[in-house]
Image (cartoon, rainbow, N blue to C red; front, side, top):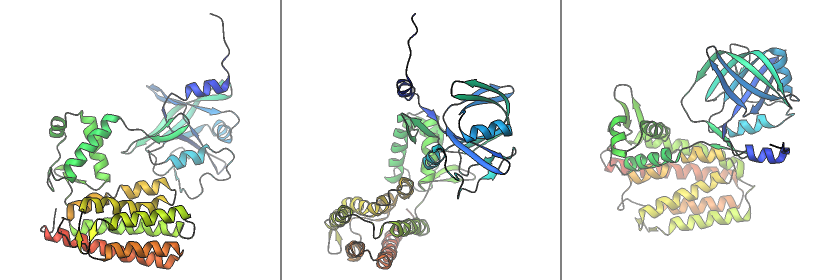
Length: 377
């Protein structure tokens, strides 16, 4: 066959179709910390445990690893795309600013929140084009529960199998709709049969539902449906308040005219589902109310903050506690209108006061609904 030359841009585009995990290689040299994001990492041997990493020969991290003879592989979790982007930027003055990494057995810095870390001693170095391949002997490894950050076609994102996502949605619906009652045991074997799903997908769903506060771990019975009581509801609403106050601090005075108009539209959409003190459409109100509050978080432009807000599952908690004959109260719409007005005036103290007051109203409404159902749902 006749050899044909493939130029760099074409090769980059083609190889971008290979999805990989994302790691940050870190090391320490003479008291200075170094790190860079890479995707070219592979297990090499189990006996002895070894792996290989490829580093650009022109990078400062490559020089530090080559000189120190040691490095750590920090496997990033699905919510650490910001770290991947930070350590991917060449020439940054201090990539570790504000991170407070801990020191590993090799002396390499270990990133907080990483899904797993592997510490290595350099055993051999091989050159290949613009990069060098470091063969590392593993001296320490540890992992936590969670899902990895993925890299595909130049973008970072979550890795989620379609089947896993489907089983999560189905089990979540069974819990929220109370097909599975409060404190009901969630045995993997039973769910595998009922959902016609593989055990791995059921475990994945249970892990996510624990994070969403819909499932809890009992030390004796394993996973069980988390009952909703007043204390749980208050805890979730206090978390919501902290997120909203933080978002307000960021966005007040910086909202565009379009964003302010959208606040007004969403407030009106929520109000159309209430007539006086009566819910005309409870499901419609819950959806519109969630979209109104979420818009404040969206306005920050911080994806991780939006995801944290969504994980509170406030709409589901509200749907469990309230019924169509619940007292709507005028404050539900009045608080929305007051918040829109305060945002339009860029009055941060007023915004904070309305958000705090409205959160207390929401807690009271939720508490009344829970108590009407016996104190636990």
